[in-house]
Image (cartoon, rainbow, N blue to C red):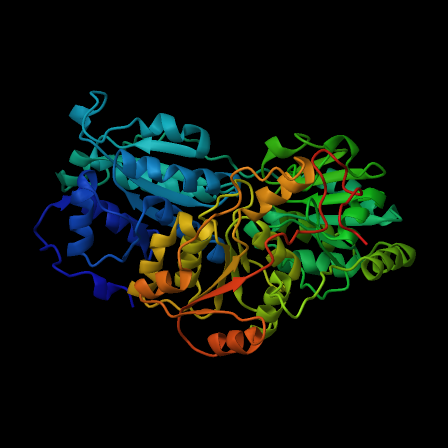
Length: 573
């Protein structure tokens, strides 16, 4: 599908390979099918090789978009996303996406162009010290000085990106290394500095203690985080919790670990989580956290989090154990292996049904369900998301930008499988959504891909609409337009006496005409006929931009105010 965008002029057998040829060959050996990139002076040799070898490069319209698209690809598949950018501003434009991937533990390998080795450190045109800049937001970074070292550096970078806790890796490629020729691609030397952590044996004694405590608990609770998704451990999690009737709370990025309609699933916890999930944190007497880092949007007041519970924490990253919440049972382990051990070693033990606890959770769900006020004269964002859930049978890959729409999507779309929500969790990056949707669609073309985005976030990376047109991607883009930076405005209303400083847009572009300018069909929903219009959009196998004007002051509830414990929620009936 993509090769038609490149020409082909293969190397002759007796030609010497350039560093760029070696790079592309090594990527092929790593199973890389496409990259997201944007050319520039320092990577001209690389893009010449891309042309000659018909390598699939998705030409984005901004380097930030390249990294977010690679994130969307990686989040949807679990594979490593690969990026090409040039030196200087090309590399610095990529920093936001790299930082986003670092906080969400997303495996990327980002190749940054660099000035030639002889010019490094001399303030050459478009030179920046990208190794220093990216050091805090990567697992490891490299600068290759000899083309002979390139294959081993790339191989190690791919191993680093997925070893232990996944994350981004940067390879800085000086222009002369990309253009140098070699007939010897492996002399045993390498610039590689990273020592990949060897997998440790499971702490079976601690896991046994965890299970004994779980079986004795009257109010057990499982918190399933992004580490469960990253470890491909959803089948093991589902078997474990159903075997022992353990209720489950998810984080934002792990929605789909259990289907939304599963009786054991309490929903997302934290600042905008469900009532029953947050009350479960408060009331439980044993909490098993698998793969969540207890971030401040989940454990909103660490000192008062799960005050009645003994806490166990299983995480692949040992530095997370005890970092935020004091943990009685810490275990460094891969989530899948730990869950498999817990299940297989405990089936013969007597377990409690804890019927009273499950009934209490059901009562909370029924007494305080997710709800919103309906109004036939207005289009409610929650209703739009629910209708999309119905039209897609709850099986679409849902991509969001950041803001109120992100939380409404988390609350009202009926997620049922892992890797179904593609969103910016830890960094909360506006502009993430549109390019990430492109990456997700290229990753899973057989799935319907729906992007929910706000009127603020769409304008941060709107140029990537041109990529959707060029590659003829069927992505449904739904702008929930409240003519404001809605989430920031909500905080101003609640905590700053409604001083709406710089959060209300006095004017906006015509999004319908803007989409038309990019060659994408568009439609604006009317309060009287929006459901039929939406159904017509989803009935067609083509991209579309849908704009829905929603109430300007609509709030996201429930909400936990900053510093308040999980059980103190605003907007609960």
